[in-house]
Image (cartoon, rainbow, N blue to C red):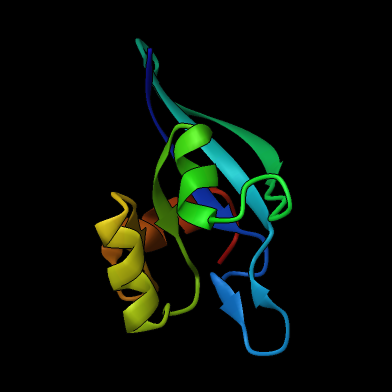
Length: 105
């Protein structure tokens, strides 16, 4: 049973000063089984030409949360929240636990 999808930006943050929004994401599917939680990881690439808005692409892929290893910009977090996407940063215990379980920190 899948309990949800989480996107993790490839370079750790949702945006870059020189190139704009991150386009490459790890997509983590969490599944609960009798042996405990299992993670299935795949890659997702956002094509802004096909889907101009990142939150729309996240929704199309069934993603409700984004976990960053770097602290995201506050205004970006607010924008994502308005679109129904929860963003967790480095200050979150849940984010650290997820990133550590995948050996990303």
